[in-house]
Structures are given as structure tokens and as C-alpha cells.
Length: 81
Image (cartoon, rainbow, N blue to C red):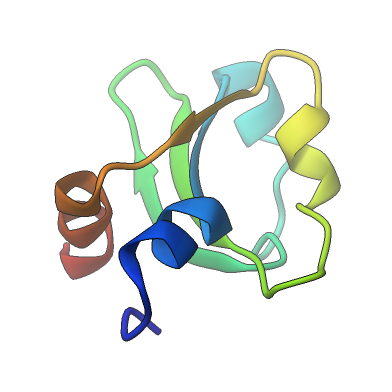
């Protein structure tokens, strides 16, 4: 999964912060989910990956969801936990 060029890794991975109000509604895995961590305030931190030419999951644009591009170090920490 992480054996590709740096730019490609950064383009295909996002960290989503899903607020507690929406986190309660997530049943099962989100398409492309590679890591999930519960946050102290009840929110979720999700790392999602997409294949080339595939759209991000709808959750990326859901109200209250914040998406961040990950640095290589952050990506490693997120998927290694």
C-alpha cells in the first residue's frame, strides 16, 4: 500500500476528522478506510485512500467533516498505530 512515489501517496490519502454527531452514524468501514482512531471528544479520525481515477468517498464532503492532506510522517504514524 505504501510502496509508491511520495507525491502519489500524498494525493491518494486523506485524514478525515468526523465530528461526534456524525461519527455515531458510521456503521462499518468507510470505502478506502485504512485507519480509524476515536478522539477524546467523541469524534473520529479516519485515514482513507483512493485508487487513481476513483473519487473520494462521499464522507469527505459531508457537513462538519474536515479533510487534511497528510505529510509522509503523519501518514506513517496513522497507518502504523
